[in-house]
Image (cartoon, rainbow, N blue to C red; front, side, top):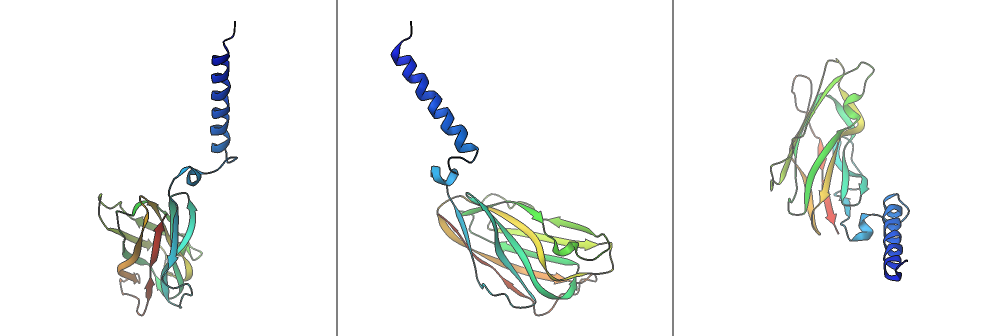
Length: 188
């Protein structure tokens, strides 16, 4: 004997399970549709001058955005980049990085070391160091130095500004007249 209430509950459970499966497979929405946060980046200056380093938007997946640290027509052959990125930890958190292609330039293989340790909880600055060794030719012209991933943790906005930025040669001579441009990251 089948009880109508149990059959109805079973059919409802199957419908809910099917909706969850379809949604997670891309057929029914994303986390944003379920009330999650989204991220958007607005650069300080959309048109980049020569010999500049800037933040620019990469991929965004729900509440996580990848920001590319982009070199625009860098004049001096570069082996080292060090900089801090200031942000509001109540709005966003740093969640990781990926190497870029800028320091991989030139025909000979290079050893490139990327250092971007996660800031302490509540800290408002990320420190990044990239160093290229093992080749006689530095990197220059255009390319992504590194890709930084941030997650929005609450609705709001934060400036993303470079602090103490340096591009340097193999002998640690700083490049001159390099413009560093940040932007604004908005969580909604």
